[in-house]
Length: 146
Image (cartoon, rainbow, N blue to C red):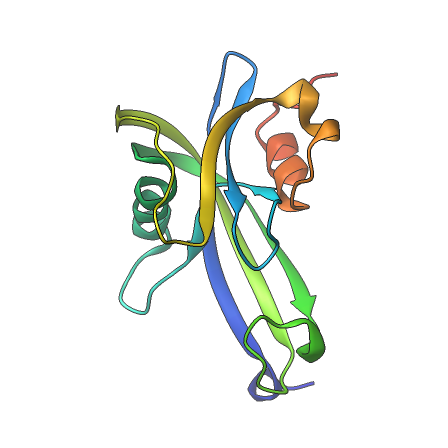
């Protein structure tokens, strides 16, 4: 398949862990009730670093600084599973950074793609529905323990 035969979505996410807890945001859509890393789509005139800072503020109320790239993950979303149907498959590219909170206060997003933000114990993640990138990113960050 040629690159002109599918769509690509570039997104940036951040990992911040404090006292054994990871900051996550519960999705409103497309996967309602699923905990995800704060982050999302990179806008056309935006860097991936700027996108994760903006998304963190939107979804959690926190100002963050980017401390470095943890990794890049990609997966294919078949045409029939896309949130916005257009008959084309999509390659989702997820750029994950380590970030640190520099200001702001925890709050939930209003009228956005997430409905709640919370610090979740890393050890309790198996008891919460979460996206696949969450444990992958925590592994990259060295936060899953031995």
